[in-house]
Amino acid sequence: MSKLNRKEHGRPAAPTRIIHLGIGNFTRAHQAWYTEHAEDADEWGIAGFAGRTTLEPRESPRDDALDAQEGLYQLCIQNPDGDKVEVMSSVSHTYRSHEHEAWTKLFADPKVAIVTSTITEAGYCRDNEGNLDLNDELVKKDIELLKCGDLESPVFTGPGKFIRGLLARRNADAGPITFVPCDNIPENGEMAERIIRQAAEQVDPSLLEWIDQKVGFVTTMVDRITPRATDEDRDRVAEETGIRDEGLVVTEPFAEWVLAGEFKAGRPKWETMGAKFVDDVVPHEMRKLFLLNGSHSLMAYAASILGHETVYDAICDERVRGWVEEWWDNAATQLPLPQKEIQDYRNALIERYKNPRIKHLLAQIANDGTQKLPIRIVPTIQGLIKDGTVATGATRAVAAWVLHLRGIGAPIGDAGADELKPLVSGELDEAVENVCKWLKIDDERIVDAVLEQAEELESLKA
Picture 1 (cartoon, one colour):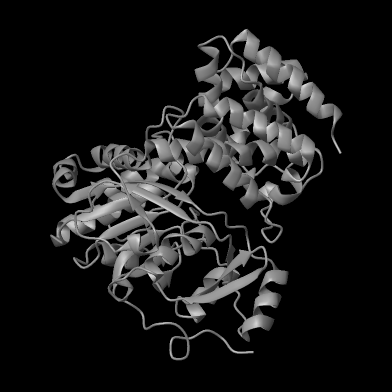
Picture 2: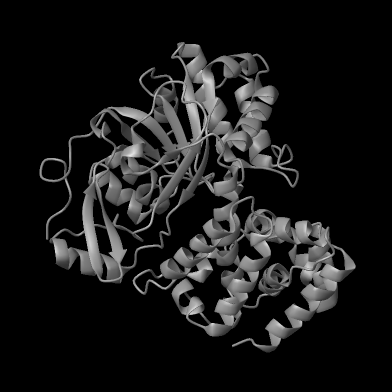
């Protein structure tokens, strides 16, 4: 069984012009795939940094594999009728999260033009108002360190790393650069700009003027379902290709990328593979956030109570399918898009969810609900209650999340849940009222609907 290496597989490493923070499976199925197939791919290499925020360096088999394979990995597109496997060469170099010197050096390189990121909603260290969380202990540590002009000691948060990089770039007079966040956050370009500017103001206010002149922020909508590869996947692909790859990525055939904003130092020709450059990402973003991500959250919490483990299992259950359709009916009323486009997208989602080859774990989707529910589900509830309508498709997701926080259904994987656990430890009606208040949806009609659905879901527990 052979191993991936650039002498025998893929392309030579392209010069590094993109820094990516959070080089996980999704990035390698999405942004790296678009870069791999760009018309000018030989000019745009990616330096991928692990995005885990941790005080102690941690290793993973994926990191080890990417290092040993010189950044190469196999992408397995799981069509319903079989696999399509290709070697991906667009990641020129990989780094661990604690390789701070390499991060600083790359930011100071004038050839680097773009910083992309997939560090999850939690990675930007925002408070409940969407601003930089200045009470976060790691944020405070990073700010104090950077205030002293120390660009050598470790920083541990996404905002801290971005500011450290920008300080190094300004010091080197390395020219303009553009941030392209690729996380599922509404108006993520504006969000990244706000967080970075707020961090800069704390560290060195003079950096703000330089950011105004030299730094671009692009808003994106990204879409490609990318479950974790299993040992079964790795064994099957090894048998098909003769290559054993611990860094294997599996994904679905569908991919979408919509971008808006100015690239101040150039970009790859991502449109080669269908990336769309538009004036306003928001309608596309809302469509995906509400219809795809929202239904994912609903299934993660509600369908797991019934004992389902994957999206495929859940959507094949007619009861769950009905819940999803009801949620989509609610969400569609809040989307500024033609009804035909919305219906076409709904139909496409059902087709994607019913791909039996994609084992997308509900437990994986259920992580970080404190960051996801407020942007995926709550806006629809708030929008409809203004017209006197209780969005029962949406309130079911909240009801299921309350039960999730009480230990029912998918396991809890959410640092933010620690704040809520005391609020859900009492009687169910008290837990529902407390969570609705925390989500800012404590209208009596909404609370009553959530409680009724929570009681119903609890009675269905597998």
